[in-house]
Image (cartoon, rainbow, N blue to C red; front, side, top):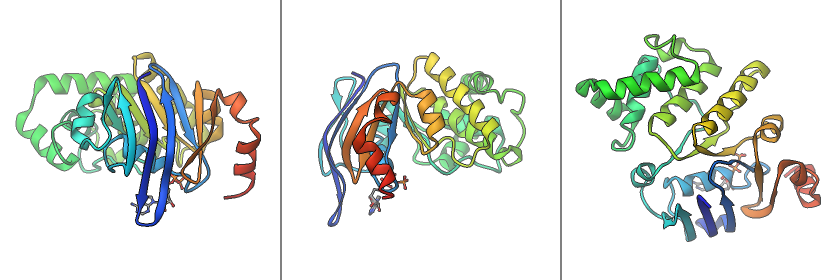
Amino acid sequence: MLLVVDALSKSFGGLKAIQDLSFTIRSGEIHGLIGPNGAGKTTTFNLISGFYKPTSGQIVFDGRDIAGMNIHHIAKLGIVRTFQATTVFKDFTVLQNVVAGRHMHTHYNILTALIRSGADGEFKNERRAIEILDIVGLGNRLHESAASLSHGHQKVLGLAIALAAEPRLLLLDEPFAGMNPEETNRMIELIRKVREHGISIVLVEHDMHAVMSLCDRITVLHFGKFLADGPPDKVVRNEAVIEAYLGGV
Ligand SMILES: Nc1ncnc2c1ncn2[C@@H]1O[C@H](COP(=O)(O)OP(=O)(O)OP(=O)(O)O)[C@@H](O)[C@H]1O
């Protein structure tokens, strides 16, 4: 197992956002994390990536308990996340954004990373950034400002920034949000391609078409608790899952 989440809990004051949650991620898989609004998906990402410290429980990555470690330490070990909102620096070029992603291990925010990458002008980082942009299909837009990209391409650039940190496990928070069907299909292909590069993926997503076509396995959360897991075709037929979604909560 690449990642083992064991009896994980997180409370905010009196609110138990995550309760006694356990699930596993296998090496090389695309794993969906789904559930109705407020189920705790983003909180789970925040716990795994070190944005939040768990109230209790273990998160074991490649044999090492990472629960409570800081974001930078966890990123260095190989877990990198993207965000629901597009998080590119619009005033900088496509290439500068990805070069900055190479510095995310060591810097607290992308702005410091951008300034630092400019100061260093490191050739190696730039070469790798160009390789990554070729992989995601933005290799012909290197010197355009990020602001000039369409919404779909800005989401792709967000993915490229995350890839620049050389993750072993990539956490994607709603990569399909706001995309039209064509952009969605392109992103599905791109995520498959990322996995072919040996990167394991956890996907939080509401677009069920994308989840069903991409994921090897799915874990379903409901009110911060584990509800079900298994291959997509099995999970959608699970009574408790149907109830949770149709219940409208
Ligand atoms: N920083 C925080 N402070 C207080 N409560 C929080 C915080 N973050 C999340 N919560 C609460 O934890 C619960 C789970 O929220 P979370 O955002 O993880 O759900 P989600 O499954 O990602 O939902 P959505 O699909 O709407 O994005 C919610 O009740 C939310 O209000």
